[in-house]
Image 1: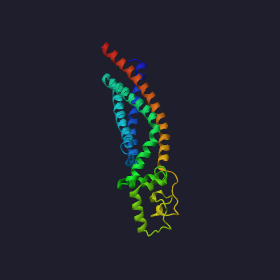
Image 2 (image 1 turned 120 degrees about the horizontal axis):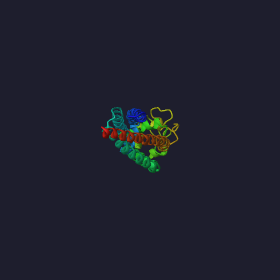
Image 3 (image 1 turned 45 degrees about the vertical axis):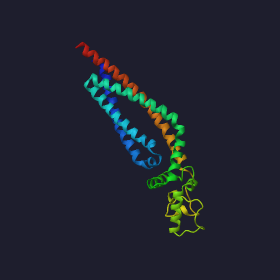
Image 4 (image 1 turned 30 degrees about the horizontal axis):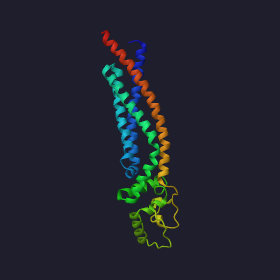
Amino acid sequence: MDCGMKFIKYLLFAFNLIFFIFGIAMIAVGAAVEIKYRSLVTLTGSAISAAPVLVICIGVFIFLIGFFGCCGAYKENYCMVTTFAALMGFILILEIAATISAYVLRAKVEVYLKKSFKKSIAEYKSETKKAFNFIQVQFKCCGSVSYADWNNSAIFIAEAKAEAAKLKYNSTVTAAILVPDSCCIKETVGCGLLKTRKIHPSGCVPKIETLFKKNIIAVGGIGVAIIIIQIIGIVFACMLMRTIKAQYEVV
């Protein structure tokens, strides 16, 4: 093998080593997001929970691709390099499709979040209470679009009135629209029931939507960069495959 092909071999090996490490990083990031935003997943359902799971799956796939690429380049194994190139091409197609889909569906994020939050507020099940409290504290928000959304939950209103009676709050101190204590800027027991409360003015959906759209632009930019790098990797793999095949034919 001449110096040029040796250079391609070691460059492809280094490329796949980085790709291998990147796969591990994606698995870690996906797991961290799943754990940190589990409460948001509880409220919005499987569509949002699929995102970190998908990141983990792609990370595992990239991990395997990097393994085949590293071993194939180091051992100059035609089958492994071919497998690497095929898998790289497959994931490249998936990434392009995912990027286009994310761009097309980005405008529907607000509608989906509003629908999910409205349903969760109305039902106000035991598993969503903790989730709402976490999100309202984490994002410094109250309700879906505004704090008034809590007035549409008969279940919450009944529980809030019972809590007001327990705390011996009368009509002179009880607010017209009741909210969870997690809506308060300074959270204390029963603060969401008081007229004198100070609550977060913004709803949760606009804040989460802004965060999502801000991050999706950054993720999209990273995705385009990865696609370009992958194309370069595929080109190097094809060049190495051709050289290895030529050596076999000479032998």
